[in-house]
Length: 176
Figure 1 (tube, rainbow, N blue to C red):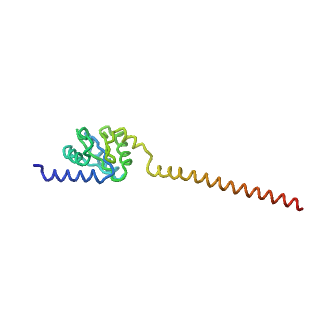
Figure 2 (cartoon, rainbow, N blue to C red):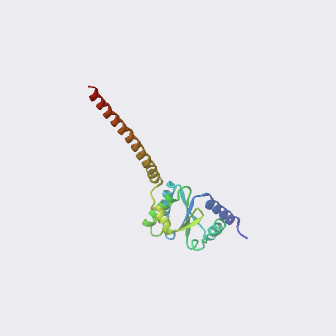
Figure 3 (cartoon, one colour):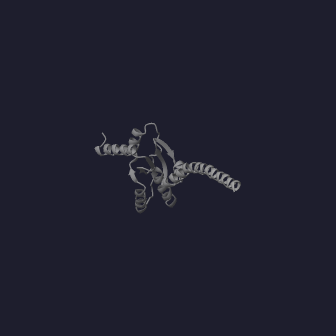
């Protein structure tokens, strides 16, 4: 018979898996306490958090929420999850940064939109420009054709004014 605290832990993990944008799984073996604190502090800035979980409870919760994914290999060895509440890319950037500095922090995999993503895809995601930079690029891409159209249309009126002014000047010469 499962203990009440284990049942509650599984229910809590299921809620975490369902209610957040994405989950990143890490191996934290050998990670020093101060390094874990530094990672947690940096993750808070990106609206994410680190949670150390028991593999058996994590696997039970994950199998119930992500029934079509095979997560057995992920829940081997010390496992912690990084829960990205709103922006998975920012959380991936933080983890990539720390995994470069700390060889003891290994990114195993992640789940985004109910799809399993591997370590390489997470690193590529971390290399994406920030949301703000992407929005600026989008606005520039949308604005560019509009600016070109405005310049073209204003060029037509400029040319019309130039032609009309030339006609006026020619008529003045003829009448004088």
